[in-house]
Length: 448
Image 1 (cartoon, rainbow, N blue to C red):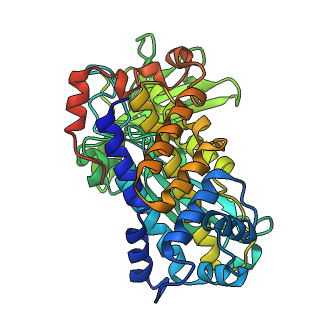
Image 2 (cartoon, rainbow, N blue to C red):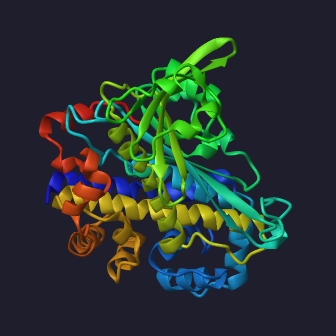
């Protein structure tokens, strides 16, 4: 274990949950006006610890954990009223932003020369929705009002190479996903991957104009002009040339994939890209992928495998809902619901940080899925040690947590990942990437 790196990570983690930092944040936001038993530091550390280490069903669960952690006998009403304050969601949101910005770093990479190694970041875009108490239907209307009158959506922008979200936005479930995409100019030198709900030709054109690349699932209803078409074996599909897309869908081969060069007129100017067509034997229909990735560097097979990397954001959503208490909280109060959502996500971010730190220090491939599960007695001990701030007890607890993850959260089949998982295209933990490439990657600018 590298003692210098361990000290660096220990300092970073302690800094985001530092007593002075959290108390000053709470005071600046108006969460408190004067020091009481329930200080912002005590409230924040306790709620984050509860979300990270146990199943939380009610506010009473959080209150009991607060009293246990701080050995206090506070009244439930006093605790409840702190979460009810308008400043509470802002406090936990700012804490989440601090954790994401301070504790995220590049943890995955590609060897030089491998597909996708040219990109600074692989940006995954998606959203996840869930219901709230029906009394919040006015503040957070749901798309399916008969089933879930109140619901929210979390719009997530994730950097695959950091294996962590870089931007999360909360909105009513009825809001359009298009309003929460990164700006096209911010994607210069990056690859953006998204599902068909985010398809917008003007947006894709703007990514291309600003020097970025995209790989997006397409809708079957689009109707571009097909300039040229080839099967995967290289045979030209002459019957598909210079025709409208909708007029030739019956001519696509089912036994192998095909690639079309397609064009739209946007604001009077041509916009060309590649459209990959593949038959889905399960759904009995064709799947379509749109991309501006170079045809010479990225074959049809590589493009299709690359799109599967987008599944990592779906696994992140599963982690949020399964292991960090992101669920329908039984409260009619908007501020409390928002506070618990942000606290849940902050707890998840902390557990990802610990997993990535263990991976780097122990040079063991860690499963973030396993690391997100309740971690026996080690993680509660770590939060308990933070009561006293940075010190020998905290360092011992952090080291014990890291060693625990190294033994109990290893990826079960890293060799299988190379054949069928995310490593098929050469995606590796940074400690496995060659030193020369690792130095190059560390010099690249961080995501905005």
